[in-house]
Structure formats: C-alpha cells, structure tokens
Image (cartoon, rainbow, N blue to C red; front, top):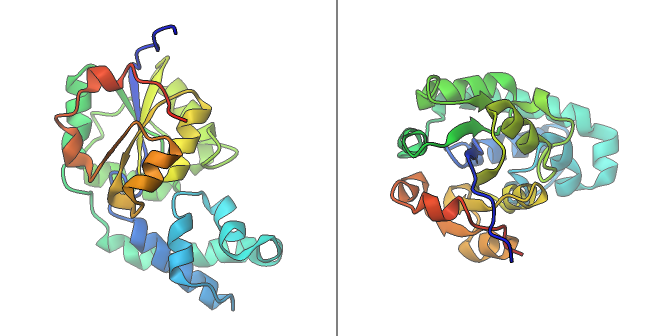
Length: 226
C-alpha cells in the first residue's frame, strides 16, 4: 500500500471543537421548535448538532416539518441563539492548540459552517486572528456537513494540498472521509468514544488540551478509517 500523503493543513471545526457552544445551540434549536409548535425532545436536537441548519430540521423532525417550517425554524433558532452568545467561550486550550499547530509548521484553517457573525465572534474570542490561514462560514459552501463542501473550500483558501481535520461529531468524521482526510475527534461535542471511533476517527481525546502533545507528524500521515 502506498504511503499516505503528509497533511500540510489542519482544518478545525469550531462549534463544539474549539468553542463551548454545542449545548447553547441545542437549547436555541429546542426553543425554536417549541416556538413553532413542534414538540421534539432536546436529546434528539443535541444528536443533530454538528449538522448545518439546512439539514438539522429534517433530521430532528422529519421532511414534512422541513417543507412546512424549515425557514421559519432557522429564523427562530437565530433569534433564540442571539441572547446566548454572550455566554459562549473557547474551550480550554483551544487557542494553545492553534498556536501549537502553527509552531509545528501546519497551515491552519477554521472550517466553520456557522453564520459569519458567529464565526467572527469565535475568531476574536480565540485570539486567533494572526494565526489562521483561512476562515470559512456558512456563506462559503452550498451544502453543510456531513457534505465535504466547507472542508474543500477551507483547504483551498488556506493554500494547502492535503488535510487532517479536527472535529467533535460523527458528521465531522464523515465529511473528512469524503475528502480523503483523517479526522481527530474531541469529545467536547457530547458524542462518545465508541461513536466517534465507529465513525472512523483516527484518534479520540477529551478536549483540545489533550492534543497539544499529540504526535502530529504521525497523525499527518494517517489514513481515514472505515
């Protein structure tokens, strides 16, 4: 078997991976569903966090709800999330991870499919403006994860050739595999080790701090699993 090409770029997911926002989004979506008269349990909402809003409604409540209320629900989610934005913060050592990757010679990009103002807030809170080679938002891709569009855009804009990704959900792992990239997973999005490993993650750790001393030279030449 030919040796895997060495990744020159690390593509970082934002929500749930670098920013402690997963449960804020789950609460906002749950409130949005209730405000539109759709009764869904919050655990089911949480299981879909990591998908883009264009996919989440159908995943949680079915195609009929998406057809009838999809745009209204997405607008309601945005309203419900807005007051929660003051509470969000980076996960411990998220900034340090970005800095360490740069020190190791990687190009680093945020492969976010979040709204532009949410992503700008994350970059500011992470104090990463001068460390990033590219930043994407929902406006940069036609389809959200688990489609690979946002990863392809981020890699291209960072000027890289081969990527390794870091994410927090099975959707991140699946999107990475679709571009032939291995995915390192953190548990900070609330998914379990077995779920992330089963999806194909090449390494699963508790949070960004656990990746500071990871063997990135080895990870950079790993292959997607599954």
